[in-house]
Length: 291
Image: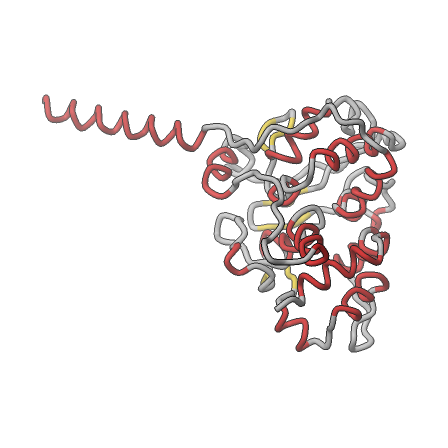
């Protein structure tokens, strides 16, 4: 009998320790949110981050930022929400602190956010960009129509599970330039791995939906990140790209083979990269094609 109690006690201790580990908060460095936000800069950050393309369902004729098309994954269908300034169905009643927590740590007012929202990438953004983006979203025209509901089956609809996922796979931090590389390369790396989150779609994910960072830009066969081609230097060169042509494709969607990119990438170009400065398109192309 005593042995059974010892075993039971050990199980309880191990269980409690495991729960404490998987449920502990995952947060990054504190941000300075007292900075003055600039709407114009924030509107550009909105285009860098793909907010318009993701949170607008153009096929259904929805208003800009009023909710996007569902992202179908093995864990369910995730519908990007209304992020206009409407206080009821949008994010108009969010504080800048709540917005920062969502972007930086994947924690929304409703609890843990699913990594279908790329906070793994947005966490790299600077404090100034976060407050600028917040200012721009608060300045949007409020849309009172709610986005469609996500369809997430049990047990994946239990947001608390995301606490464990974060402890396994998420390390919030800010971007640090790569030593020995020039400013253009590092700007491109920041955009591709940060706000533009190219890496989120063009990298395979494991069985739990986490990015395989050691296979960055190797392409995604489908699943959580959707199907997307490789963006490694080798794949891009084989497809006929150099820095100039890749930057041009990010502007107009025309490929070296005289095709026009459509589907999700077409939306990314139409609502995102075509609005970028030539310097930013060149920076991403420079980073992706770097040796």
